[in-house]
Length: 126
Ligand code: 5GP
Image (tube, rainbow, N blue to C red; front, side, top):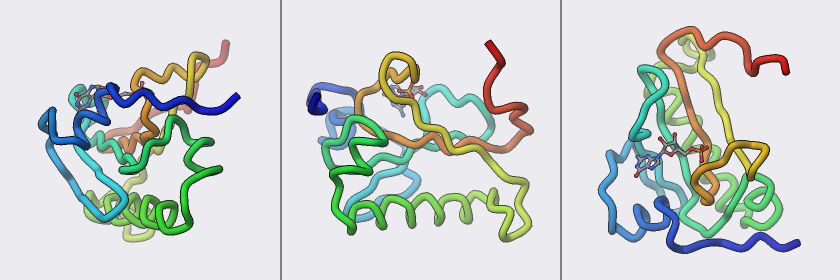
């Protein structure tokens, strides 16, 4: 089944400038901004500017330029926030939720970069 993008979702509205955001970094293909309800001292959302619903949609259909731009932006943010273990930082978690079982609330692909405190295990055992 094809991914159907809903252009009324809140991140599409942020990209159109209809809703304000606290921008962390912007590049030709990517926008990163602070989550409105942070789960840790640092909680940044990284989104592609293109109309992709989920991680797998982006991975399958985005251009190489978009994919590289997105991930290089993530790396720069990890460095800027002092989270990267490569420069002595404490680490962080990168999460993306997809669809119903994934608990995705906003149907525009986004990666959560979360850090600033120990985050415990990845997921609770059922
Ligand atoms: P999801 O559950 O889809 O993976 O995560 C959606 C995230 O978007 C949540 O962490 C939520 O707090 C955040 N969010 C929802 N609406 C807004 C908004 O208008 N602005 C910002 N900055 N974050 C939002």
